Length: 295
Image 1 (cartoon, helix red, strand yellow):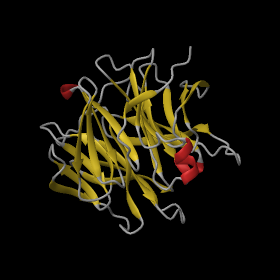
Image 2 (cartoon, one colour):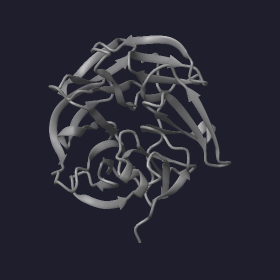
Image 3 (cartoon, helix red, strand yellow):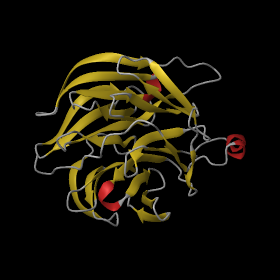
């Protein structure tokens, strides 16, 4: 029987993104990009803390001594446990008027990989970057919206999406150096007038299968390592945005969603848009890797 997502928390985000499971706190942390907030949700007791931040926040990782590393509009910041900026680690080298950091994830050694979004979609000005103690380095250029970062369980393959181009690529990845090589097509979706579902945020399970949220597609998908579509699960929101495995056994699949900019008719029909959803799955996810400032 196909699992069905349930409402995990009713708070509506404008543009929910980047859920990650913090095992030490038994909490799911995620962002509201344009709502300028980090959320900390504890499913054990249903508590939910909202941490305001100073600017649009695209992605977060866990800082080893507490708090977060965050990709925001103007740069990469270290934030404390309440979302306050402690230090600016690197500037966004693109125009802040048309670019902000978007999806991001730590690699198996604790480097922070994150990309930007070319907001006007005017010509592929976005990039995928790597941040570590050596600084910020561009890895891929010519993107519209960098998204869908997820690592194969052995850390030697990286999945990466360019959302408006409906594509996911797979790269060879060197976890010792953080270098990318040998890009190859993994999944390409074909939009129709009725269905413009495209690959947004993602996660990988212990079997190496890639789970992707289809923005404007109202569903999530699971792909085998060879690119075969294995499962498709409807979500009660037109725009699911990203997926994370959580819970004590990493078998709860959390899904963030968006409501910003959606038509009034759609929001009336899908009033849970912007909420956080959860479903129990049979496969285990991969644990969250924290950022390592010393690598």
